[in-house]
Image 1 (cartoon, protein in one colour):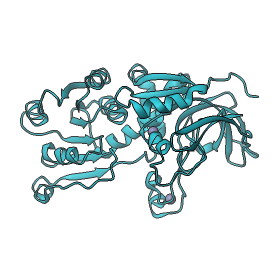
Image 2: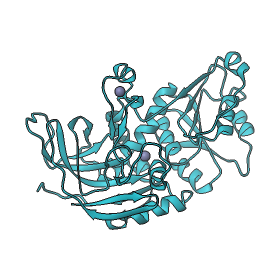
Image 3: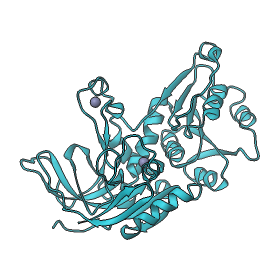
Image 4: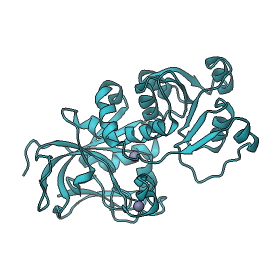
Length: 344
Ligand SMILES: [Zn+2]
Ligand SMILES: [Zn+2]
């Protein structure tokens, strides 16, 4: 089978590899569509602490079930389209025992720590497969990034009618917007790129703020009648914006940090007690993948608008270069391998 192998920083090519075989508890899947994200670019650039080359990248994907390992008696059927949760937690560490496999201390992610989806076929645990019914393959590939947004929103406790401020309208901020709006929250999105804000307004944001023209503090003040929002989701990882999130959130409110950075951030100690602040991190998803499938199924038109670029499998290296060189132009970049109707 053909696979796109990342062989070194900035180097990806198509190679012939032996097709994988499913062992007990595993399923062999014909990959349909793979989404790329900022995390993939980290690996592609050689900046990921655990990734080693050569590696088949790709962790946002769907595929068609081909066959099962010995002894399978479950409900999945060959030919079924499934979204695949790319997380391989150890199952025994402290976080896993507490049902937080999303932050397992030994977590392996397909496409980062082990080979992922940029290949014609993959073998994955049956437990990672979520049937998507009649959802188109492109949308099934977006379940994983939506699950990232869903985890942040569930962590925040945002309920219908709550005001949720989202800092950053990249793919994660957009997924947060979709999930918060899906729960009936009132969403304001802040960014400096007009094209991203335009998209956010189609995904459920009732108010968008372009920081190039407007102060966030002023906009938040008038939007919340001076109270501050109940929830702020920080989706950039920029330290100054994490500080801003703590500054503008309502007393008793919740800040969820889902953006990633290697930097430190200074916060006002007094705010923690004065506001009785809740500051939470959010990573991957914990038991929300099936709900992420349902979120996508409820809002297929919104989720489809995340797609800005499509490439055939042969052009996977070009897709990676586009996202590396022009992240401001891209939300979701998809690589399509094609759905094969029948098992073979
Ligand atoms: Zn991703
Ligand atoms: Zn674990």
